Length: 488
Image (cartoon, rainbow, N blue to C red; front, top):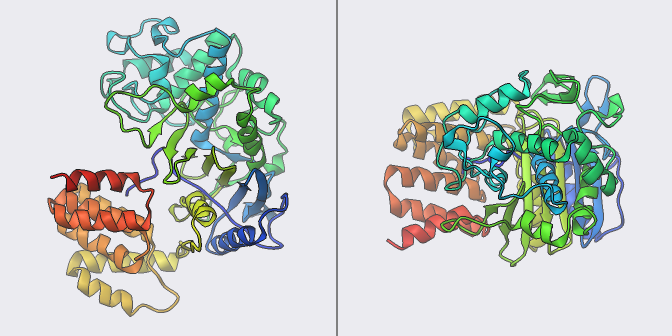
């Protein structure tokens, strides 16, 4: 599974004496197991803050790693992070609030709010923008590229549509920036001002926003790309009122795990959104041909578990910061992880914690450290695989020094690169490294299944997808492929 759509992914860490905590007593054995998992992640490079709620009580809220390595300042529950595309749920909630107040309808066409809309885009509705079914491009510029509102609208709406509006799903940051503009037009207020007054202030969230909060400079996390200092998000190129329109409304809001938890709690009540508004927020009208699990709601990815319970989730990343937010709406559980050092090793943190909570005796996977030595070793084994085949590479792997190991995500990435090049034999050999080295990884078998499927070998594809589903019963993608292949 070459995934990090809908975004990118998570973080977590815990070490007694390293992280500062704010918790309510919870089930001790469960809390200890999650903390042990997070401690191990911190040792292999995780940096961020994590909050876990179980049975309606906060059982973990801690920081791990550093928000500022140079000054030896560690992450805490109050550390401020870029939350990426988690921003979208706020934009969507603002739209729902405006509809509650009679100031717009999600069925409105964008021609009501923008002039000179090209004919091809004239049927796009607010509903289409919210559900990424508008057909608009994903983006038309870099996050920190300066652009005026008028120029952004022209560039966005005059770009070729990827498909007729309302007929398919394709993730579009453009759509959520246009929604932020609609919030301003319908409310008569600046985007951030409206969100603060109608969403954040009622929820008690005073450490969330772009420029409105008076953030303590020391609490805003530096972002890191491996060992390189990337800097703070609010010190990049922004306008006086926050980021330019390439980012505003679709990403880049700053927040903390504690504030996002307040948001979670507020949404459980009806003070911000009415029951009818929340029903639409989570369960909007789907396309007739759309698979009902999972589906994209309004700013949330919605998923029904095997326990017949609903999860609202979303992640976000600019490849420096990573954020993940899972809300188990029927089970009194929420998991929030924010990181200032995005790394594929840690995108599954929320999913792993969820398995610890809901699956008896589950033992989470601890990835190999993304170190220079492991990078070099992984590259070496991949090269042997490509040049001499799986068997020779596997023998070399088995003879490795005890301190070295493969980086699963690097191997996976190379496998997909070879699939894209239509070099299926080599892709299969490379991806077999992961299924052999990581036999408990559902993702490894999913990826190998895809390689076999792309190569035309449906029988071996089916076997590997079945193994992936066995390891992860909630892998709906594998489940759907298995149904399709078994029906032939």
